View 1: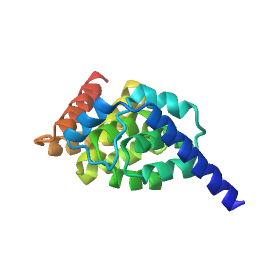
View 2: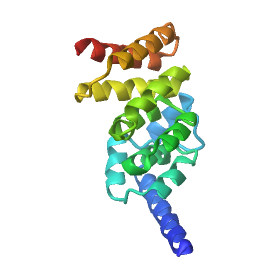
View 3: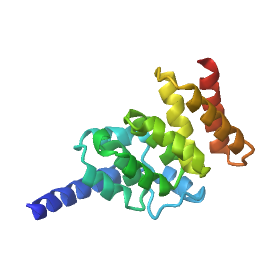
View 4: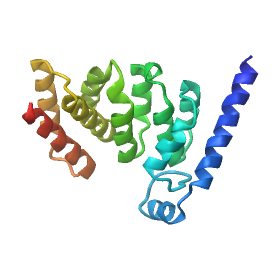
Length: 190
């Protein structure tokens, strides 16, 4: 049975890569490489097209883990889109946070997956406490999304967010600074 499952996942991976090659944008791929994106391979497929590709495939945790483990921009973004919310446990989230490579991954993870989990608030608060740039970007954007969607914070949670973001704000990291600012705007709007 296991070999059949592996074969099925292997075939889905081949089919996904075939779709990525067919959707490749050479100009965008070259620009991303020139900008220093840290991937072995970049197809240059834009997010809306990736979402369309993801819609054609099953959500599957094993497949998502395999996609995440590859050093290819598009497979990592597809991993986020194909990971079932219920399988994205706090442990898996923490593992992925440790291996985030770009602000784009942090943004997509915050918007499309982490914000939908039951552990999102607790996970985000712990990531803010680490002071690590990309997990903090993800946490700020996820918390902002949750606030905009009506999630309520306890007084202590708001204090923790305020302390962590104030401590991180004198950062030179543009993505982190913007994420903190948008989170603070959402907090002030409440």
